[in-house]
Image (cartoon, rainbow, N blue to C red; front, side, top):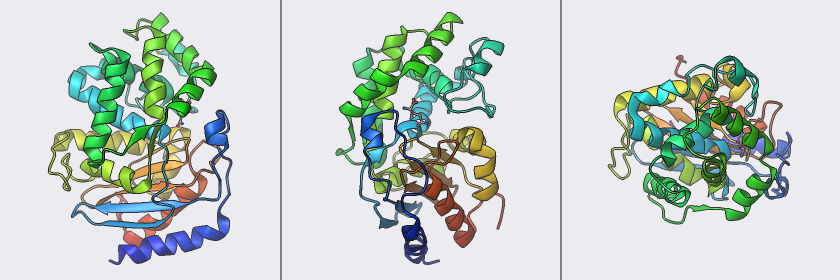
Length: 308
Ligand code: GLN
């Protein structure tokens, strides 16, 4: 299969539509991003990268960081992590608080904000916030094998200034005894992980361990066991797009995780890791053109996990 032709075709069909959707505007750094951008990169398990469009432009990975923090937390806590966070789709928006009251401060899954905040609290255990942020950044550089990956401190600061709902979620869970650390400390780390800047090529490389039974084939680094990689993929498929997860599975059929910066990482198990980015979001906060591009890709490649 000519994957370069596939990504070129996707970019060509997206280019007349650049600017569709609504760019996140809750912080100035995201509101200011030019909406008329689209990038895609595929890195296959045999180590080739295919890229097109704005695949080398860095963007804020935002909630895609939740997958990598979960990987770190599971490494630290093992299966006991699941006592504090569930594994069910939420059916609610990414920053919803409603379910927490009924379920004693245990969030539905690690990929909504409440769940990710608990996961960050686990990674923070035994560390100062600065060390936990450093551990996360080192992990991302290790996964991409690229030391130029950075955290955009302006984005982190703005997240802090406008993070009222995340502060509410964290306080609510602390009230139920489901946060070990003070709210300010946990959110200090959470806002920094959201502010990681990466481009599509880097992000597609970072996800490769999930496509290749837990081992990054480019570096040979074993990141997680095959079983854990499979399970993280299952969670991405069922919960990676908030209340749009069912629709993403229906149209694309790949485990994926979106971020409000307009990025989506998708995993074709045994085949490739894919990153797309376009800042305009659909109604549920996932990249509008990015979701459609992945549907096209799944159709062209036959990579849907449900068969072709
Ligand atoms: N920083 C955002 C928040 O916490 C991340 C949400 C997202 O990407 N959906 O609200």
